Image (cartoon, rainbow, N blue to C red; front, top):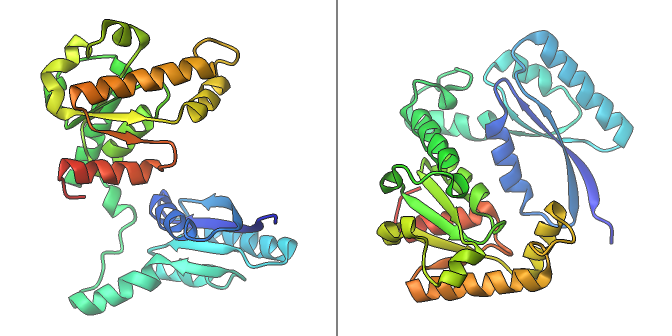
Length: 271
């Protein structure tokens, strides 16, 4: 049976990151749907707001079905205009802020992008962690590895880079990653630069068939992407990690979000 198609619109007077995060988390619970995302960030004046209103109504008319709007809009007047649209609204402020105001006995600060601001220590920590992850991606540098919170190891294309970046952006972890290559397997030992940091090492593995598909998109019809080579590398990497006492996680059917939370639990860190 074909999935039912629905349009999901992310509306915000800021970047829209919060609304997208909320929307993705909610919609992931529903199977049998194909969600088409549209984004309307930085709706910070009335002209933009009314243009967005017209666009939502146009989509509703064309598709014959109300779009789903996930919204974070701090300006109450603009929010009221947008709510005139023929849409189903998931409004972060209506749903959560009002009850929190009542519980805390305080009015919320109507400031756009406050949670992402440069004055926010958490923001600065995330940026520093992201810069660390980028500087230590794919074994490019081993400078200051002692400062890493976690070092991910695994064969090429097993998910090390996206997981490292997610850990840095979401949890402010300084995450490095290092590829295990055939030369390491032939030598039968961990790369020398990683040996002083064994307690920080965690492995990623993946089903050879999926690794073959991923690598074939990048370098088709090569030894690198062949199923036989993928099977060899995955088996050799798992043998090495088992021998070295490195706990590993299978990325075959795990999302980056799920994998990152499991890593956080393993590291015994609050998130």
